[in-house]
Image 1 (cartoon, rainbow, N blue to C red):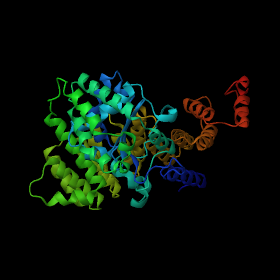
Image 2 (image 1 turned 45 degrees about the vertical axis):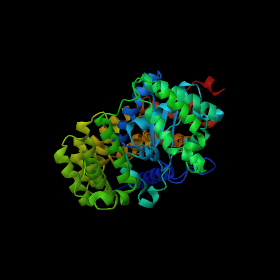
Image 3 (image 1 turned 90 degrees about the vertical axis):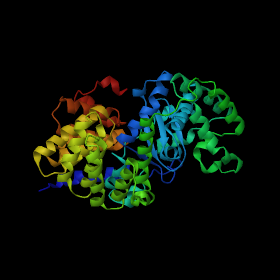
Image 4 (image 1 turned 30 degrees about the vertical axis):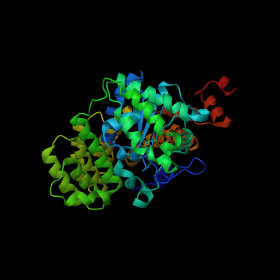
Length: 467
């Protein structure tokens, strides 16, 4: 039986979750349909495309967070510690080389010393807040398809994105810097030229306003000619994409098509001859169209061919979980983690399933999985929310409130972080590591003078620090 106190805590937690997934208000509101997405497979492909370019620029790829932004817009950006790629850009790129060309251009802005107007990039920090565990969990987190469509990131993020914009002179310099980086990485610059060439007509027909990328990255035939002259000098100009890279690019596009435009993806499902990306997209599309059994049959057929593909096991587990078959979801999710133990999102999926089962041992194991994921992604708010839920279920009230304080802190909600950290301190053993962590959250969450005085009286901080 749920106690009144614990019931109140659950209501508070649900309220926090609902607030975190609503579209931000105010002038920095996200554009309609823009969503911050998470997907292990797509992120891995993007990282593989970007890493050699970052290394050529002297940037540690591990220090760069890749953001996948769900939007039909053609857009991309790069800033200190952050690279963002819009799904619309991925879908419009014909080859991996085209996508790498745009990435090279964006990293070229950094290499050339350009920055966002008004300095908002560094001020914002570009934290993605990790509102989703995967492309297919949008509706699950929000509770409905309608609410899922409203998911968006923070106003800080979108305000920063709106601040990006460069002059034509800077664009030309970034072209040259990007071309140099591509050459240093042993990559052809032809893709960058080709991508820009595909869209140069936008300026002529005054349609550039429809694409955010070309509003902030104006192109012209003269600019393309200059870029073409530069990239043709590269010894790698005629280098083509490997079959592996081409296949991964098509898989990435197929996956996005299945999730984001299932009615389009489903059209090809009746073709007699289907390649792997098409069948993959069909399975996802069936899932999105509320046909889980059809989706599972398609996935099982793909698993016969690729039994060690962690993403197929992940997808199967997600479908089963979301259609209230958590007990069946456990095995495929365990398999996905076993095949890819360093992928935190897969562990979060498994952890979510385990804590949903009515078994104390499973819940305890789910907590372990979530904590392992948090060692790799400390700011994953979904993992903190699930951890709070798990601790609340087993009666660990202090730890539940501490996890909620972490959740609120990483969302940037200092008021709620302070409230829950103070409550956690009342329930946790004094001077334990968890109690000290709760104290740290209090001190970094804009505490009032009265709060600081209370901490000073108990000896948690020195009285001199109040001044």
